[in-house]
Image (tube, rainbow, N blue to C red; front, side, top):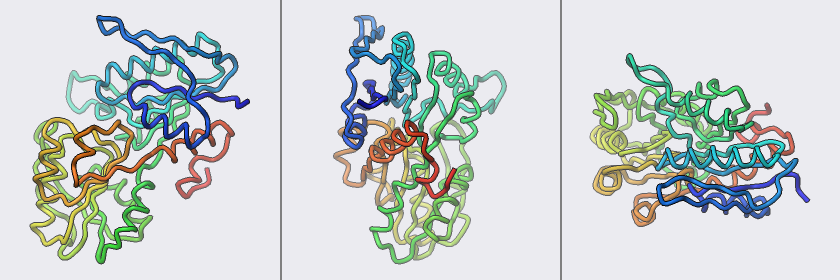
Length: 315
């Protein structure tokens, strides 16, 4: 019998099932229900004494409920004598609040890290943190996986004649550069000014895109304002086509309408956040699964094998 167990919260059970299938390991039983006032109640239905436990639970919307569910499950497992508790959090909520950008505001990403550690989580596995320095908010090991590896094969299958990688903003340059280097492509930058949260204005394009197939790389897409405006700006400068690859499909507010009506030719996302019916119906959206990658990382973590070697390094 294996020494580790998989549990799933309610945030993304489809992804948990895919991970379970890849590992050929059934999900362990946990009863999760809510009282009439919304209070979460958890009971672990199997013995976890002495086991290494992995909880699959992104803290996507509703972020507060999904985060609280993760914390309560962790407490239940800790009090049931689990040997270790690894939180598999494909999408780490509150990551955009990672610094004091102005006076009298919280650093919510750090607060969430404190809550997770206090609850009893001993390791975290996540994908494409909005800011890599969030790893330093934890005093436990954090595996921040590169979502770009999932897009590489798909992009190569498109056989673009003249592809170029683009960063949709200055903050994403390092991510785009890593991806451009792995594909052996040039890179351009969309320079924009954000006046307020969830609103953006594309200013100019740094680099030549005329006659090229542009592939924008980002960690998340929320209201799709940035991506759609960037696609329009790129096509105005002569881009042949514009594809966007984003790991986390937050897709809130007017996102779907903007994608459907805008200049973006294709949006490639992953299932770190449970996909909605709207995403499945939108003919511009392609969903790639993180299940295989997360399953392999879980296996390697349990067997104390290198994780980074999956992404081309041997640490």
